[in-house]
Structure formats: C-alpha cells, structure tokens
Length: 258
Image 1 (tube, rainbow, N blue to C red):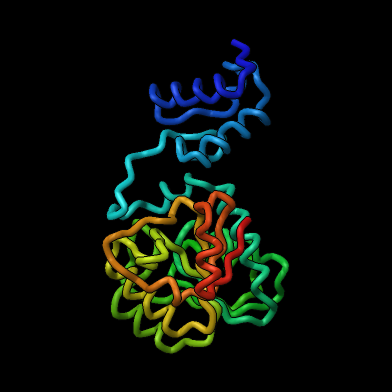
Image 2 (cartoon, one colour; image 1 turned 120 degrees about the horizontal axis):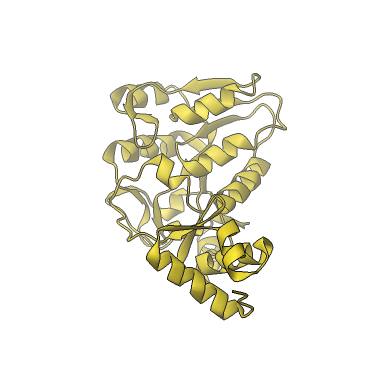
C-alpha cells in the first residue's frame, strides 16, 4: 500500500503499534511504499508529540509511565537514543584536556563517555561499571570506579562504601544523569541510595551539568535529589517544553539545546 499522505502514514504507524509493541523502519517502508528516510522523519515527529518512543531501527509503543519504577538500564537504552547521542556530543564541548570529571550512571552519561575520543588525558570518576568499562577502552585516561554495593538495574555502585570513597574527591565537573526534573521540584529519582550518592556528587562538584532528554521534564519521582538552582547547566534536546528554557535561564541555569 502506498500511503502518500503524511497524516495517513502516521496514523497507520500508530495503529500498527496498537497491535504490536514495536515496529521496524524497514517493515514500515515496505508496507507503506515510502522511503526509510521519510519513515524516520515520521517517527521523529510522532515522538516529539509523545505518541511513541524511538528505538534503534524503529519505534515502540509508549509504555504507561511509572515514575517510581526503577527501570533497568537495558530498557532505558532503547529510548530516545538519537537525542542522547547528540546530548553526549554537546556535553564534551564543556571538557578540556586534563580536566577532572565525574560521570554519573545512566544511558545519557554513557553517551558522554563515548564522545571523549578527541582527548588525550582526563581524570574521570564514575559510579557506573559499564561506563568504567567503556572508558578503559581509550587506554589513556585515569579512571576511578567508586566501590560499593552493585545495583543491577543501573549497573552502578551505591551505599556507604561508595559515599566514603566519593568524599575524597572534589572540584570536578559533574555530568549528572536525571530520571525526573521540574523547575518547581528539581531533580528526583525512584531509588534512595542513588539519590544519596547524587546529592554528595553535587555537593562536592565545581560545576554541575545535567544531561537528559526532554522526556524527563515536568515530572517528579519518589526521592528528591536537588533543587533546580543547584544545577549550573542543562543539556537537552529540542523537544524541551515551550518556554521552559527561558524560565531556566532566568534563574541562572545555562541551557544548551541540541
């Protein structure tokens, strides 16, 4: 079937997602007779309207959201990956050779780690086991992995040991992953141990840079981490809610939109 109308195509995509959880660009192109380039544009538009979630190679039905659910990192990795890549690319513009940086756990902070190839020497602290493994591949950075109890959902370390080791470090640039954010309530997360570690990260950082896609805005989760004014910079994508960037800048937060 050749579906030439953009409105018809997008409606068809949403109907297909009612029948199955995920669709592929290649299948949609074949079924509609429309190029894969055009289908990808359709999926991007539908995601901006919060009607689906982009995945690698396609899209999936938007799940019923539970902000207090401790979602696994494997599941998070599927969502908004193009936006996370661009955020990671933008974030490294705030780094220079020789810097001391902290990378919080998360799929967007992982994209920061993956864009460090142009640097020759960095001192990097992280509580994320998968990020530490990524950084080791560069073979030229000084990498510290915080010890502690391992959280399988986030592949991160938490608890008293992680807090104890973290207290030895300060004056670093913190790249902070975010589960939920609102101007009124600040940053929050479903997990108490993650919140306690993030609070100390923020307290001891020289600069706090929050990296997260626009799906996290205007939401609130179970455990409060920090107020919005404790952030120095937010890097996010162009689907940030209308007017919010101006409000954030008005309270002194640098906002970079990719």
